[in-house]
Length: 328
Image (cartoon, rainbow, N blue to C red):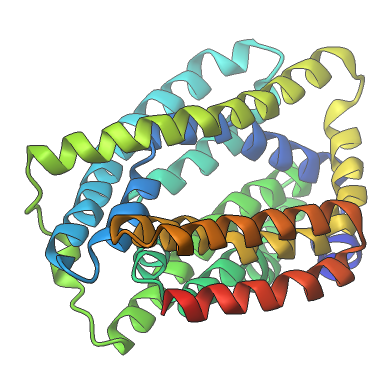
């Protein structure tokens, strides 16, 4: 990924630091909006499916139904609001250059539940399959979609100077991101069915008011915690936008430098099984097991923050393997 993002994408596919900077800023700035409208329904799905998957899987699936229907309905509202603002207010502001990239990125919320298979597999504690989708979305699929879509857009833009190669290439990044989400859904459906699980029931609406109340009551606090991070990300964009000259190009170059620490992001996949494992352990009165999960997680965090990435990965991996075997 480091080689691709630093040597291939900005040199051969989209040689425009400004375009890469605009895309990075648009996606980072709108994280706070997606976190707010999600209201933690994705986390609630994973949490409650893990809790109920053994003794009442029907109940756990209902939280997945809630997630899908909420994302489908709220996604339409999100897209309508953001497109309206991006086509009326944004062009009259200092963010006018962002208008089309924001609109393209917004359509990733239709239908809005393309990552449902990733959450379902995590909730069922099939972390092997869930991590396939995690790595696909963050690593593999962008390297498949961007070279095709962005290259075509960049070439078309060069042939049509009224649009420009850099701008059409920027829009291609948005289309490629949507294509990567679709690939996550398609591969996830295949993995889900490979386990012998029924897909159709996920898209029904069997949930009741109790599921809605529990889902949002849990999710809203998860959302508020995530919003603190999202607001910080948005504030970073707002401040640099106001204080830096040629901010988009600077941000694109900063993104290239930031890519060199990508190896540390691999550690994040080691924690994706922590919340569902603890949820299942606590709900079945396995408190010592829950304490063990937490202790191992703290050890991994301490290791990853104090020593090199390679050594911390070696320290965390045995702990994670033990967690998986205990959860099983």
